[in-house]
Image (cartoon, rainbow, N blue to C red):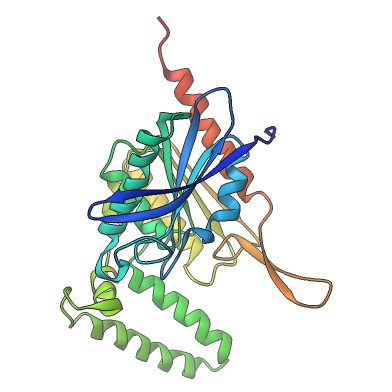
Length: 301
């Protein structure tokens, strides 16, 4: 269902997460009624708020307040994600929810969700299981297995792109698996990226999915070469079915890659990445569906 575009305001904000400060941008629609909200959570590495900016702004124009922020240790945010874990990143995601509830007067405090892509697909379900303040979640290109198994898939895709020989691919994968097994020997307190890998590479996402109570929208691109999309969806849906989860939606975009986009050739022969049609619309319609269902469930006096 198409919605009329809203005028939005943009505000640069800072807020605490434990003993650090996160910097972000809040997009607020100018609407007559309280609006739902969505906090966007990063992928891996030095991700800033800009990775979500275009899509967050587009979603805000459809009446949903959106918050994007610099991952700890990037942009103007203090701290260092390398010193943390998925649990720490989940706490940062929840700090965004707390901020919206406290500081956004046009927001409905009972309709705030989290949206995470890639690494965020591990972080967001974990955050949601630790807080009843999260009312729904959206995951994009979420892996349904440990980061180690996901990395095996990713590395094999890269190797196959470079080499056609099965023998070379198989031998290369032996080396890849040896490296990840070697990381197990390091202490979880190791400094820098190595320590972060040791604390996260063997993270099992299934306990979080098994404990999840909130409505779920899960999106994958069928051309994803970073995580195995269909296997991930199968694993996640199996757990949700086993636990009797009452409200989850799974959708695939046939031509989309890991970022739910495609490479298009421009007039001058260059390749440009563009979001796949329907991505923003799918999230917007699903969030508003949650709002309508919640409103219908409230008893009238």
